[in-house]
Image 1 (spheres, rainbow, N blue to C red):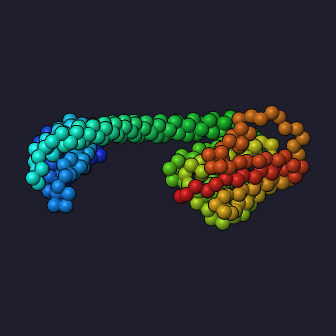
Image 2: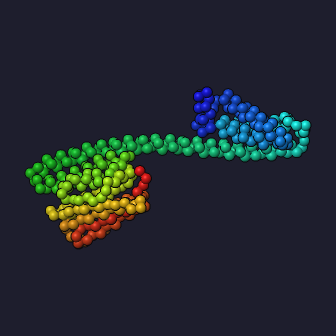
Image 3: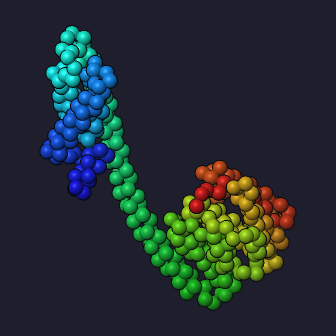
Length: 320
């Protein structure tokens, strides 16, 4: 019984074509039930000849395909003409109804077959997308592994070259560690998400925990939003290390966030850093800041104040 139910389910969903025996038996069963229903209706309306066979044609076509739908329609029409549950005999009116029955059945069978074709195509597309996604994940994992190895190699070479210049090495070491931490974080976030405070600590930690202050409640970020924000925070932190608060001995950073009406608001404030007198044309980093949150109905605004860089980020919080 379980095997028969599974065969029916796979045929109904268009996963596979049922066996010839099953499809034939199913169509015959549908015709038998429709004939019984017709007999019941005949107790009230003896002039109903073909209507009860519509469900049989539809089900036979949906499970067994167009061939069995057509065969069921022909058989139903023959039963409607030859089998009588009253004293009425087949006449021209019944033959006209037969032609109308077959015409409607033809349209129904075409519709069912068209739907089955669309479903089959969608199923193939889904399988292809799943295979491509698995391949993408494999490539990303390989690239992440190679990137980590290259970063470690660069870190070791620079340390060897600059071991007699601790001041320069200390500056470069922080930036390399921040870059490596961000790469590791993005790799972990892809598919899981994380808390915004953990993300900021991972990104800003290499610059020194006394150089920044985080204000906000614990907030879990879904994976895609977490990756976008990680890219933004890394870009801002890198700029702070090169030109902003982290490039000055007294520079400080404060990051605050809050949630209001399903939207996340983040403020990035740098103080005591070098004064930015001239801003060059927008580069990749600026374009990244402007576009990273568009997928979440968000935006990023950055201002270069005398006190330091001021950046605000707003976006919709997707369902976790």
